Image (cartoon, rainbow over all chains, first blue to last red; front, side, top):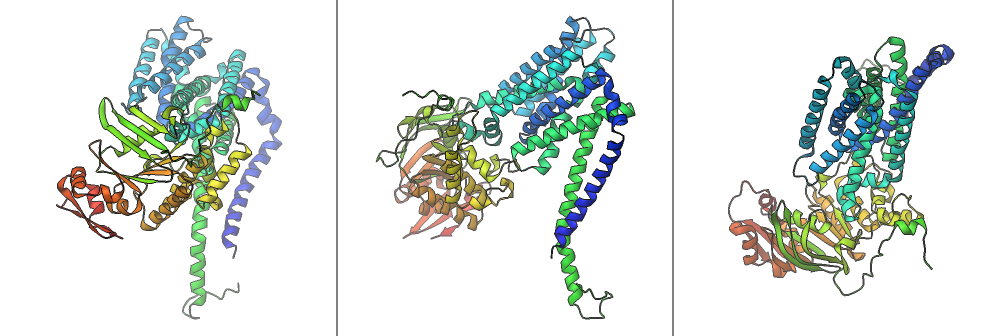
Length: 335
Length: 290
């Protein structure tokens, strides 16, 4: 009896029906809904930046999730604040050097945390807590010395995607591509040090160098993504799409692709929600990513529930069939 | 003719020497290691021959895990370790290591195939993808331990015994000449234990020497070629079980808390006094086996 498969198929078909209907509505209003915001170069740039950021942080987020580094990612995002503040101060309120300031602070923090946790003398989360709080406090202290800091601080904390200039976009694309290239080159080695560091040591791979390289890649990803969602929400870009991807993947490479897909999708959908509902872009993207996670999670739970419940229903039905007539108020099932 | 292809340049790797020499596959001389300046093991010297199965026995804190970590290269150490004549530093992948069960995240998105392929990383080299030779080695290793049919399973979907088989297959694919297993029997039922011994027999046929850390004194007495008694970071005895299991040695290893009775091929472990806080003693408490 293929009832179980049928039930799953029906559930899937219902799901697809909804998705196709949504796509249909979108398709018929494509020019008006999707393309009209993009006539403004500023918005088109913002969307492009958001997509690149979604892909890159989706891929790197895969390592963050499988290595259990969510706290590290959050901390590192906060730890770049002093670098950003320093660049801001030097440029008298200009935003051109924020990227480089953040990059220096991010890489230094990543290496600092890596150094402290080298021999497991200090627990990793303790070291992260120490470095992260200190760097963040330093950043806020620096910003507080600048006049009218409140508004600027919020841009750094929560992102300012509409400020993406052409140079910003090129930098985002360039660094994003570089990060992806390094991941592609050392995919195998990163997988080994993430899954089983002891194997990496027995194979005499430069384990420590790869670990630091991975931390630096995450730092670069965070700095690249800074303009999109800002410091405070950065961890969501790293963790949520990858967590969604882990629900549906059983190998690392497919998980990366799916994660990049969910990251890009969150960016696109979040961008349009932000545009039409007049919500800040960062939160819109993050909430979209969360919605996608919850959606995939509940679909999976439902599928599991169906797969588990169906055999039970079948046994109940068979018991009803075999019980003596008259004892149950169930009509004969001619199946 | 010199070969300057990318692959050769990236993979300056020594091929393992032949296994059929009468020389030991692994020699360890005066090995000391520890954490933060404190020496957890000191002056350990022993030889392991091809295909041998060596049990490392001792109470908690005796230094079993430290010894393994030093051998693998996870800890800085003094003394000499050489594998088939090559010094430890050059022994790419000649030691295989099966970490304690708890040290692995079983939700990791990797299939059985992926995990075994990881053992080939050195042979494949940086940047490059696996070649036919590597895929063939993985296939053979999986067939050898009877896991070929399950190669597409995610590792978290396997049973405890199957998971350990995968790691043994990885050591085979890696062409390790020595395999270290840290507490492979912890949290394993009798059937899975049997399963593990079957796979260990495969390793013996392949000439791979196996070192196991274990709590189980009785099992150690009957299933191993040699035993090492460790206590307080010192090696108290090393040799065949019948020579090692003397009342003096056992008393020195476990204190006066334990006695091992021998009746032909049967062993019986008796703790001399009730022990409340020593898990390993409770574990072997009146554990009887032929």
